[in-house]
Image (tube, protein in one colour):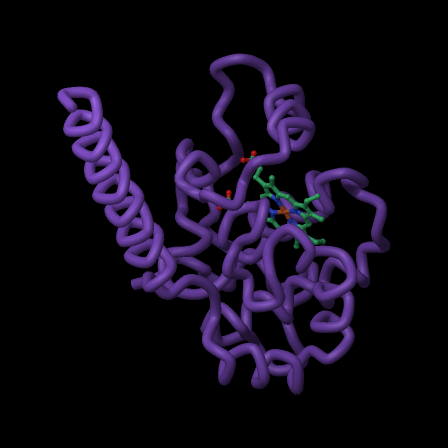
Amino acid sequence: MVMSVRNSATRRLRVVTISLGIAAIAACTATPRGASDASVANASAKAADGGKLFGQQCASCHGQRGEGVTGPAIMGPGALPVYAKESSLARNPAFTDPSELALRENARPAGAPKREPFNTAKDLFGYISQRMPMKSAGSLKPDEYWAILNFMLVAHGISVPDGGVNASNADSVSIVSK
Ligand code: HEC
């Protein structure tokens, strides 16, 4: 008799715990991440090649709107902070691949900053062209990285110069959100 009372109490506790867990997950997914559909459509029109390449080379880890999948969010509100967030992956419940975590850790010496600050389009170009796509860093042609960068910037809401961002104007294009 005592046993069965205790069992039902345990069961009730378990139900409460599970419901709380579901509520927490629902609260997380309700937070908007990534660029809006309208911004992505605008970027795909202005930088069609970049949009296509982003879909082929980047979206598997970052999502087509840059909302983050196994990699961090890289477009839209709150993305591309000047200084890297150490916990950007830890807070992403979708990040579970241990081989990617290991790759990430091996890519920099202990205690070194995760990356250089992102102030201008040139900083971002330097990062993506040397470090991405994560499992085949530097494997694309410079033109392809520039195309991807133009797509990302427009989707992120940055106004790019006529004719797009390139090697000669990238350091004058601020990507710091105001
Ligand atoms: C295999 C998965 C994968 C692919 C494919 C990939 N990335 Fe990443 N990316 C990551 C991970 C993981 C990180 C986090 C690295 C770290 O924390 O040091 C990252 C970080 C970044 C960052 C820095 C974000 C920040 O705020 O620090 C940018 C920008 C980025 N990726 C752009 C790209 C672009 C552009 C492509 C396509 C050319 C690409 N990535 C392809 C996994 C990937």
